[in-house]
Length: 398
Image (cartoon, rainbow, N blue to C red):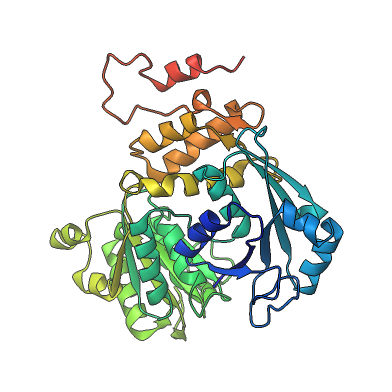
């Protein structure tokens, strides 16, 4: 479990930031600057495993300046210091880096601004794979974490672009297999005549073009986790062979004569109604029940509005060319994102934010930078900007 030290002394954002961290299963160590325990200045942090400390610029001055604060952090084996200051002249939030990113100075004009809080959370916990803010999403993550500690097969069902593969990765990262391979294969993207060889491997000369042996996806994921993405697209002829592998934990390479043991935790995903697929004989009932030991369901982005800003910040961090900071998003831009239905889910949101980065100015994303493709929605003909092309022409990019 991640841990973050928050030094409360003169830190106005302390309570709001602590609430966000704790709501997302991050342990907050509320350190004092006096004789209270745990005592940050006295390095009374035995038993804690935090690598980040958040404090105010006033606290920095109290301890003797930046060099003294860095020395204390190093003694406490902390790798990251986030120093918060209040500055009414800043447009939202301003971030500067020192010592190669080990120290980040964050100036904020409004300590209650949700976007600023999300940015600081992301600085504290950049390696969290699943970004969320919606209560039901956290209930899903809590359930996923519980099942992650077992080896049962998990079936993740949900709409296209709703984060099924991200959730699968989350399961792997929270399992006992986290240090072993995580291998994902999209069953819909591989030609039917090659899928068996790719999954189970093949011997040299097993078919035309097989000039070398290949161990296959199952053996590549040995001791780790294998994700069978969009498994509903797997041909019926191969489903029976997959069922045997899941039952016996052995694979037989194409052209091979002997079984090979495999130790793999299997996850599967689909965007289809699997009950209907089974009833219409497009998917084997016995394989479905073998895979559906523990079902998890992802939701459309429109059903979890609280996730939009945390996901947006994760996406902006991924695509922004300057890794020191990311643009500030105005309230008008945020309202546009929060008010859209997102029929394309997270993939559509990512496309929209990539466009916004191109159109942003002076490190600010405003409403003119947000161009939403409305072609998938039933837009009234009375709208002043009906098409994506109209929006592009309307955007202020001069």
